[in-house]
Length: 300
Image 1 (cartoon, helix red, strand yellow):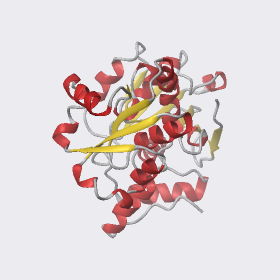
Image 2 (tube, helix red, strand yellow; image 1 turned 90 degrees about the vertical axis):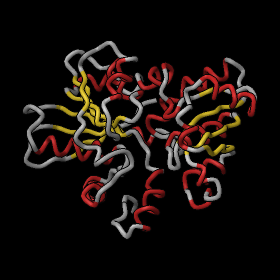
Image 3 (cartoon, rainbow, N blue to C red; image 1 turned 180 degrees about the vertical axis):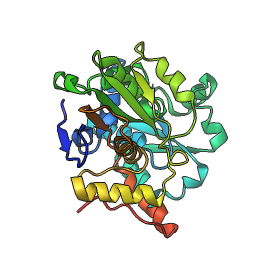
């Protein structure tokens, strides 16, 4: 399945910018989540699994995508959710409420327990509690997810000099690096602080034509500022492309800032990957309203 490349009209610059609208791939499983789940769901079926189990936070795009995919393809779904305090607040959380509507069963755990999500003993405890399941890691990143993300770029995209994307767990950028062409540079914009991502990405790639731009995380994962929100709202008003505040908003802010600073050589052709994540806007706006901050308005 291919997504469209939308041209972004820029002023006073001699670079060209396009956005690959992966957010439009599927009405409920958008962007990189659609790509990451494709081969994992096929593998689950080949193993005759009937249940998918995965991990995520309160407003996780991945949690909702797994719930929607399970509903669509006939799997039971279980979400191990970080934060015991959320157990009685499902109705106040748009992401969890939608995931529950799709049939996902939740297990809320404390943060110390959640950190054991890769521990075989913890996985065994979950197996004893829930029975046999197909395990999808937090964020969906594994070898099969990277394989799916290798299908984002198409033959027509070989004309671009730079491929840019937001980075969470590293699966999407790994797929982009693997399928990039000679002469292309892949730039990742991490949504969270920390240099561990480079090591994670290196587990999946062999090429060296990539770099992480670590200046646009806005103080850390899920952290936002009025400056970022104003940018997201103005970008939508001007270009009619909605951006989320966790991933694509920060990435696009970074790309536009780098263009302004002449980071890209003259006549560069830049392709930005829209990885979806728009469902998280509703939850973020709830938090912003509680803090009397600006809210995100990217829908007419």
